[in-house]
Image 1: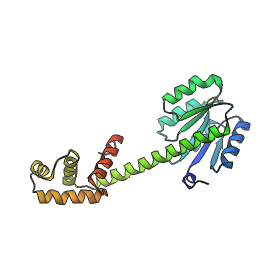
Image 2: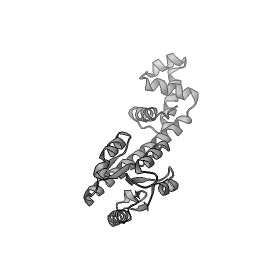
Image 3: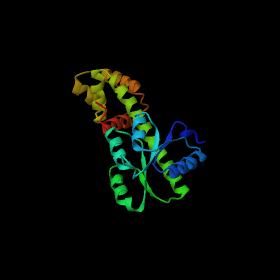
Image 4: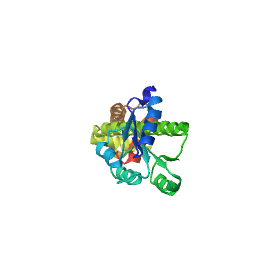
Length: 210
């Protein structure tokens, strides 16, 4: 089994028992950890924000449809990539889901290799998104440890100001700026100015930097 998969699961939600069992067999035989659900409501009851992996979801099911489950997960800010299984008549519905952020859809009957390719792609995507979120949370935690003065110095560094300019703006000596700058680099765990800027840009893009 690919070690990168070990903490991820593929969640299969399909009311068709034969198709559900076939999918579980296919995925497990290729080393994936799989959990299957016969309806959207069952999956929703088991869902929590710590779940990692991807969701393979039939569009049409009794009760809550696959599309309704997808929309509810969106309201809960789930980051699980979703692959919809569709019949021919469901393609417009699947396209609408793609526009709302679904990862992909696959039409029945589908080839095993096509499903495996989509699942692999989704697991990579989810892994990268989780790593990005962890990195952003770490940067936000480090930012919170800066003193008010260190944050002022950081903001001016990000604005491209030189030490002398920072000293003039804050009314402090260049030596004091150098001390604050060194502390900022240390607290942020930044090995270079470029690394520091990448960290800040990343969290500000996410809206978590302040």
